[in-house]
Length: 387
Image (tube, rainbow, N blue to C red; front, side, top):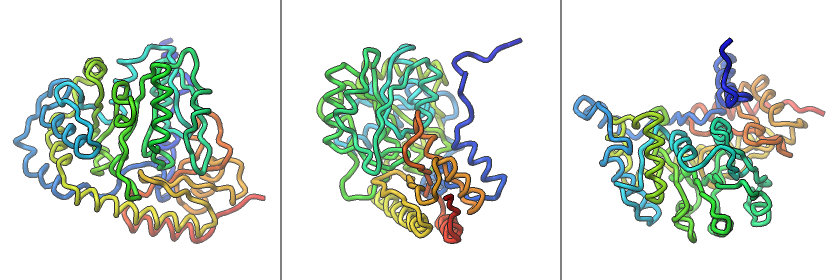
């Protein structure tokens, strides 16, 4: 009998995807999956409709079209002040997940340890497992979820070769501070670690301070690979268009790995993506104002139901403390919200290697205003409690 590969043992459909399926079955509002269900920029859609017939439809070179890589470099320079060479320091990828897989494959060997900060995006764990890498968790404690030098140093082992950070964070929406990034830089330099920074939510934040790119802090530029995508900033996750940037010697190996996986990112979408990356600051200001409005509306709904949503600095999620429901786990809370309120969320356990101490659920607010309003209405009926 043909066997499934050992690397797949224990892997299954993500809790996020499973909740999406259940929402469809029950007619529940899906706050579980970050589907970016707000309209893409009208100018981008118009350009696609007008020009799609005439743009290129063959393969691009493995690293991506020059027009796309140049647009990435210009945006990085504009937003972070970091200068990168588009010809040698950028690779277009099939989403940020494709960028992560190519990076892990190119720069790490099976058995290497990779520090991850809990709570974390679950795809990090599945990617590490598929490649035979060893997750080494650092537990961050809410509500601050702050990185401390003590906890980070305690996680480093003789097998540690890298760490993955995410800012703004999924699921908490927290942005790493300059002080925290300096701690990360010091530990990374001391132990000669690769730093992989996931910054896909870099354009979505809610206070006056602009996004702080990890590669701009201390000595991180020389050892940091930055992952990003167009899906979140332009509400086009289905385009699966991302990119990775970093030091030339690292990006060269990542380009080869990305090529071996998928040949290239979708070439016609790269051409259109370059147009999106060149949108002006007015677009990003309006984007942030829109998400701030949605954040406040959904948070008010959870608060009115007696629950305790956090106050995210960025991204488009709430991490909600459901202790008031009298439940022991986020899974119990998510099930009650689904069955009783017809509101789908993701249990906090999906973002930890080991169960969290608080029954959290994650709720996405990248949805039309009327859908958020209906979710708030359903939460207003109250939540069932145990005890």
